[in-house]
Length: 197
Image 1 (cartoon, rainbow, N blue to C red):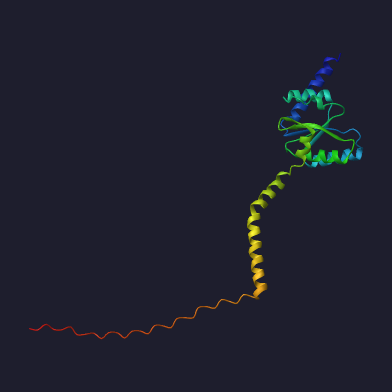
Image 2 (cartoon, rainbow, N blue to C red; image 1 turned 180 degrees about the horizontal axis):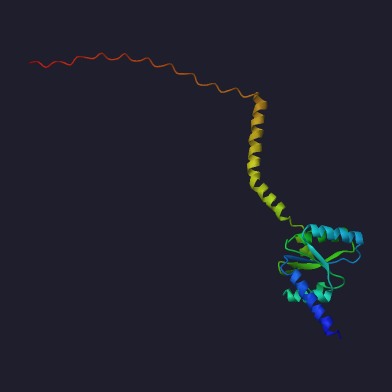
């Protein structure tokens, strides 16, 4: 039976990990068995660059940590060596880890947690394909501007076609000035009749 000192250390470890993992938007659990040192180094550098924290944690510790976080239904994912990638940014852990799992055969995704809900491998893969926020903004802006861009292109094409058919459009002649109307002769003043006396 472990001594009180060892138990206290384990409890402290669980408390520290719980604090570190608390508040993440997404957790992705992966098996990293079989990664070379070079692959592991490259993976961790990319995760760091995207603001994703990544740790290999004992399964018994992970079970306790997620129990403390109030997230149930993840214990079955903690079989064999388990690493967890987590971040405040929803898609980042899934994007990077799914890419590596696809490229590196021994590595596999076990599942995860998205916004407090347990996620299957398929849901993590689906999340990895969602565009990031900047790309989404660009797509929305493009979709809003597209009708105006299309209209401008159409107007330009019509103008170019008319030019090709009839050469350059002739300048519109200014309307001729109307001749000034002759001034009517001023009526002669007729002397008023003087009343007879």
